[in-house]
Image (cartoon, rainbow, N blue to C red; front, side, top):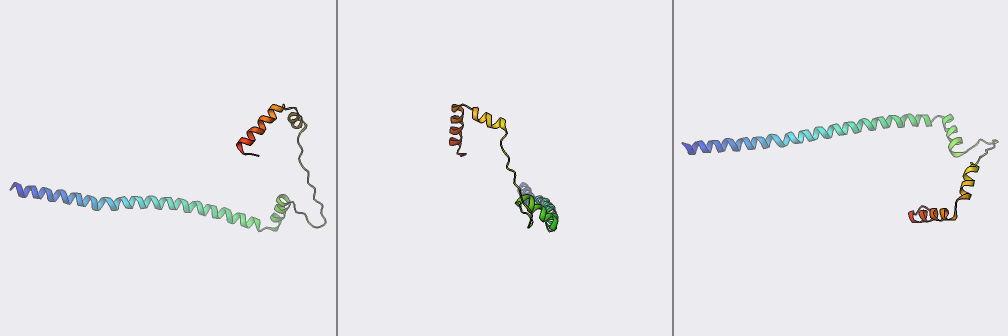
Length: 120
């Protein structure tokens, strides 16, 4: 009688373990897929927002007045017959005086630092 009871317990134990594996792995995959779906939905929403922003910018750039403003500001273009003037910024007198008054050692140290860093 104890042999059949032991076999029955073993059978129930094995059945419980097999059932746990059968339920655990698909449940884990389901949770993983739900997380992935959530991540992809967030990415989709971000891409849709970016798409709306780009569509608005494209419609703004299709306006001839806006294109003229951009051509004048960014490219310095002018209409035929107009004259373009460029005012070059100059250093303030304080900056020029400060650079001239720097010692030779200070200038050498600055030169050495830019040489070591590879800036210039």
